[in-house]
Amino acid sequence: MKKIINWFLNPPVTGQSTILIIRLMAGTVFFWEGILKFVYTNQGVGRFTKLGFPFPETTAHFVAVGEIIGGLLLIFGLFTRITAFYFVIQMIVAVLSTKIDLYLGTSPLPLPPAPPKVGIWAVLHEIRSDYAQILTCVFLVIEGAGRRSLDFIRATSKQVYSMGDK
Image (cartoon, rainbow, N blue to C red):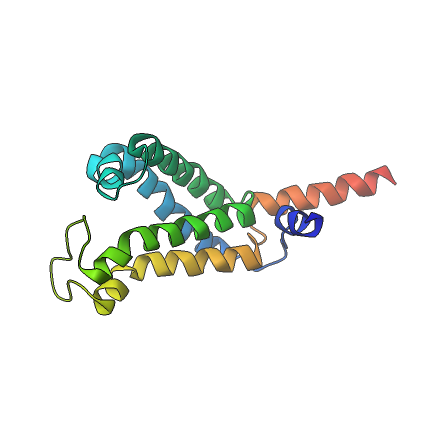
């Protein structure tokens, strides 16, 4: 367990600087989706109510705040592995809670506006952005934030500080 915690808390920070582009893509999407859950009821509380989540108002606000804060953490590259792992779990839950019913044709949410409306092809079409976000976050869990990140500054300042102690 200690190894896992250490792995999450001390990600590699020597990755390419261009990882910033991946963090910006994922972070900004989560950030604005979190804001949308507060601004538009049909994206937040209304959606969580239709899906049958317990305590939909609390759940929607909790998820929205997590997306806003987590999105900013990804953008700045702070606690990147932990945040990306949280988003992988969140997105898997989102896909499972919204797309199984779409597959079966029993979704409480509006069906897609154009065919395919139900079945596997409808699900594959509708999860395209979820799939991209999941894989992007898996990449960030594995590779870390890269050199242009607060994780890099945090890691290198620890090294400089520990070298000064010797």
